[in-house]
Length: 312
Image (cartoon, rainbow, N blue to C red; front, side, top):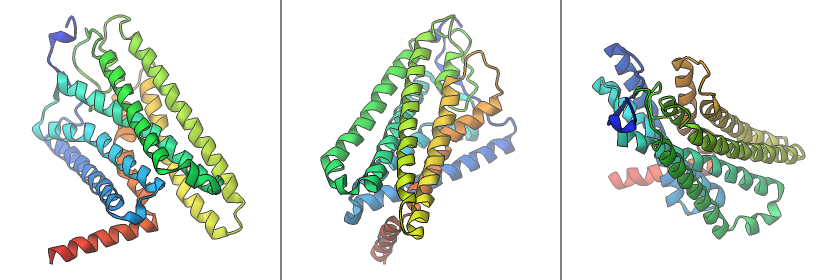
């Protein structure tokens, strides 16, 4: 194929060849998707409806839940539909939409996770200044900046990726339209501009990661000075899982997008890495960031009771 205009669809990686395994893949992804929808949907509803949760921490959690819903909805439904219909095809415009939406939600989530680390740092290390530094206007601006950074990043990556001539066919070794896999189909050195943009983006994300780690180092230092052993245990039990998920999310994403084009890796490894950064975090984040929180649990209990009362 001479260039990208020679075809109107891409062929995605099939999880399995046999019908039984295709249906198993559909069932597994359906379970993960429904769990992510339910958990993130409950968080959004609880935070929006309960005035006790109208604080900066829960405001950011609501936006994180929205971004997680967007991330998992960008890739999983199409993969499930393809397995159910026994096809690998995705339209050219559908592929571009996947690239844009995934870049938007992942970039915005990295920015938001950085903001959330800053929020926890101020709350634990500088509590007397919390009301001043994390006022309503400041929180709205930070959330808006996270979304705006995601939108700009998605626009640049999508426009750059789909302006590159493709002459290596239309078969992608991934279950969704991933930028590095599309670049493998490019002609000669025409992909280098997008590679440069990817490198810049990844280093910005790495900068966010360093900021998050440094914030948690300061938090841990403050926690270790706490006189209460119960307080230290509570803080560590909340912070360590968050840091672990952020580390997994960012490191797997960096591996997928910074890996040299010429490197040899099996489709299975690429597949596992893609699942770890695009499917696992949206399903796990609600459990680690929110469901263990007593205030949120109480808000959810009230919400469920209200729904049951209205039904009767």
